[in-house]
Image (cartoon, rainbow, N blue to C red):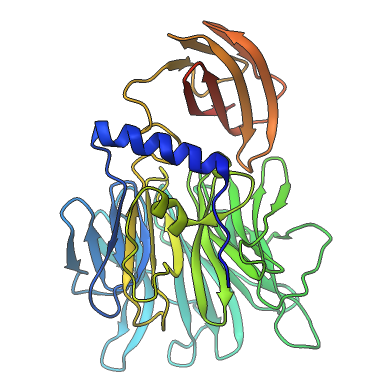
Length: 431
């Protein structure tokens, strides 16, 4: 099967970056870990990644075993707080969800009316501020709901569908909004629908009023701007909670794909199902074009060698909040797969593509007026929302000007500023 190639716009950006990186010693790099079971689950802005049972430091290129009291690692935030698991009853090998706060592992426990020996759980996300941990937990063998744990009050909230269908929480934001899926009655069996909900049990399905035909669909992550990503009927999507805008994208191979993670800078990653049990990592950002592309192609265009067994990258599972690090694992049984990490070094946002900044701007966050100053003449200013839709364009801009953003909704935007022999993209937050 022929893999889709990257757009001309993206290739031009990478070529510029490559030239600039050669003079700035920028370090776009791909590393693959050796040893079975080193697949990554998550990574933070400091380049600290977690595998199933180890910490990886990109700066030192070293793996460190998890703490003795922990039995598994699932997600990490920029404060180094980790969601995972530890023993509930070690002699009988019964586990429980847990969280590492202030470098101490704290047990979360089970629902009061759940019998741990007959029930099951999966720990998933931790909020950026470390206040919440979420995952799925059952009461007995078949009654599945979501747990939401408040690390500040030590409260364990039970979230169940009032109709008795299974509910799973994969990701949680600083406000306790959980993203995941809700099962729906379906004569053919499982029908998971993307859903977000809270500890009060208010469940919202997306996209509103549509029912998928694929059996498995989900929200996989929420970023700090309440932008959610996942998959619906085999198409990766981005959902902006503030504007309730739902945008789907085309899988590069034409089969099916999903977004697994999105950074605070709007970089989404995931994977494309190119063949049966064969995946290829994908990446999306407006600077790369209107559709997801293969991360392998992005790196290959920069001369970075992908030295995996099959020449493919497999699954991209997480991107750091700042968009610099992407982690995942190669094709093969996930429990035994080797992990990989990429340092994009500000490549996608373009900040590594210039030896000096041509543009300055203030304030950020901005309420109404954004001031833009440039040492060179600005010919064009384009504003994109986080889903890549162009919301404004100004030509013949000149220098030292202002942009009135009062008509834009609150959220994160990318402002592309271009002039004679330069182009720069900046991120702003509209209040």
